Image (cartoon, rainbow, N blue to C red; front, side, top):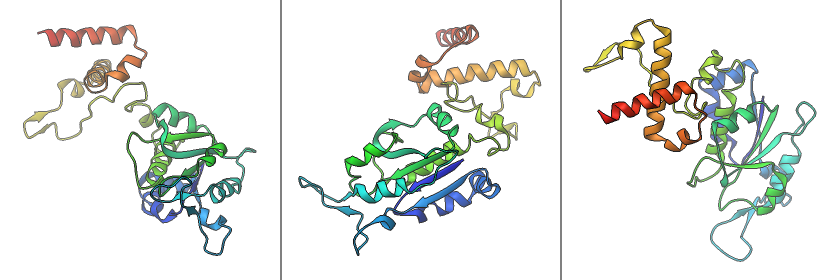
Amino acid sequence: MRFHVITLFPELFGSPLRAGLIGKAIARGQIEVAFKNPRDFATDKHKSVDDTPYGGGSGMVMMAGPIVDALESLPESDGARPHRILMTPQGAPLTQQRAEALSALPALALVCGRYEGVDDRVRDYVDEEISLGDFVLLGGEVAAMAVVECVARLVPGVLGNDASAVDESHVASLLEYPQYTRPAEFRGATVPDVLRSGDHGAIARYRRKEALRRTRARRPDLLAAATLSDEDLKLLAELDAETDR
């Protein structure tokens, strides 16, 4: 999988791309992250990439030309141009389901805005817009790194144990069940007995029930949209009975 990042500050990605599983995946050639700086496509002697906004207002706006030229300079992957994404707080929220779809593509191009944003005409040259949430960052680089990480971890082999990508929060529209490790007792808090029982059926049932409990308490919107089995409905009824006691 190849990621192309259009950014004025490629140096911001140095440490995250060298550390942990992402760094190992890059070293193994499972993913590739390349950078294009819009300043390299500026046409004046000052290498200008921004200008004052038409109509007045504070700050500067990134020009369309250098960004679009950078996008159009990217090589094809598997006979197609990279899927182009503008990182912007005006975009659709990034979800696990969207990350899964993006991980099936051969290449992504992530456009990182800066200053007051990008010339709106850039939107004519991207395939979609993605946001991390209802807040504003100094630029799109942190958001682009989040996309790289959440998509790259879904590429087969990157996690080492591909099952790790399945039993996660949001994968099945539910939050993940509680996790524990040694010691069995920590400052008076103990690991649930069922997790030490060796009964894999009971453990699976416990985990599903706790995922439902946590999702209902913290993200009822996710639970409302989830596809629930008959067993899930039984577990929810048990949770209701516990609440009524």
